[in-house]
Length: 556
Image (cartoon, rainbow, N blue to C red; front, side, top):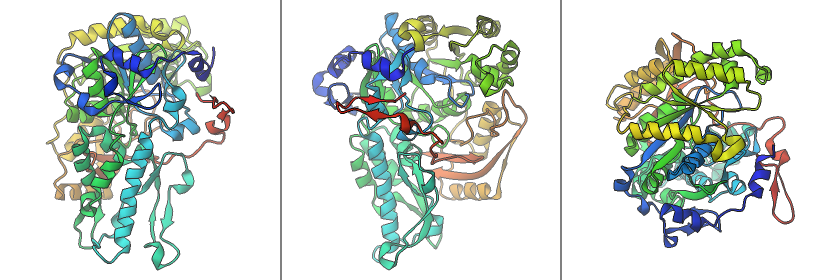
């Protein structure tokens, strides 16, 4: 099998105006970024047209470290839907440079289910992440400038500031730093650090905004810290929101590209799936729903993380109702949760597979909490034995589930036709099935408990003294009626990365609680969440090169 970039280079891309015409978008409405990329103005979104379209979410079982292929499945499924005569668009997140140059590589699908031009999308694309980075760091600079100057000083206590700086690169040495050294003209010394851009609250805020004014207001709501007197300080107190929004005036517009088969694809926004909501922008999803009959989108990690936040945060803020869910399962991940070691996952092991089916069952249960029965998509690997595929298929069918073998990595849309037929049928039948898990008006502790017990299978939730203090402060600020965005490991359904399969009755331990008032959610943190990854011993960057004609190699 050829590499992803070799396959991508063999494809003759269609001009982006041709892709837009498939959706009924006029050339004059496009903001071109060369021949193969374009921005879509948000005034094109039509709420009336949206109501006729079907929204399909792709999520997964608990992944192995390499992931289980949600992006590839999303792209392949969309190509498959178009092959069976449906007008479908895939809507995805933008990749971060950190993983591209680090350990995971790109995020544009794989094999014969990719979005193109893959080099552009994986690298600078249309500059959205750079704009988020600049807007975030502008606020950082304004904060330190206010502390430094005597005029208009807000009395901000540096010890209360949680706002760091960001950059779109894996750089562990910048996680914890001290700034302002070198004398009185160099700023006020204090501890701070860097997060990766995808973990920025500005990114999360952009992805949940409905227009430029809403974005500006949300940016103004970002909570910075407190004065020495204990009064809260928000970004609006620094008059930061206008300039920040100005830097994001183009980044707020969704990006139109294409799949390897010339299917429309909208790529926009890229928040983390544990510290934030882990899905593309509300505007991108609405744009897809405006111009398509079926929209396929994905949420980061598994059902208890990405899908939970998609349903309870993004869908609630965006007024979105999902019509079908694809639950991506792989034989290798099920064996992993059944006790097989990572290095043995390519070997046939029916016993481990059967033991790991409990993980699948829990994720099915999770989706059913929202009123939807998922379609299981088996993302096929060449090492999967027929016996293992039969065991998984029989298990799903015995539990009343639709299940299809997805070979879109190898065969493109042709390999996802069976899955596409099942998903279209499910979406057409589910007109208004979706129901959220909780009400925003419930108490913080009650919302957290609902997620922990229903989604994770926990017995109860415990809070540290610091977490309790933070909840008390959030209630004092009158911001406790926001949705919950629990940050936890993606390696387990629980908050313990070492618990595989389907753990039950454990205690979720919330060590701290943060407020993302701009994005509009509360972040209880269970365990340690890495917001600035480091490079691996052998980074992917070492494999990437470019020749004198500008041809890039080594991306995957």
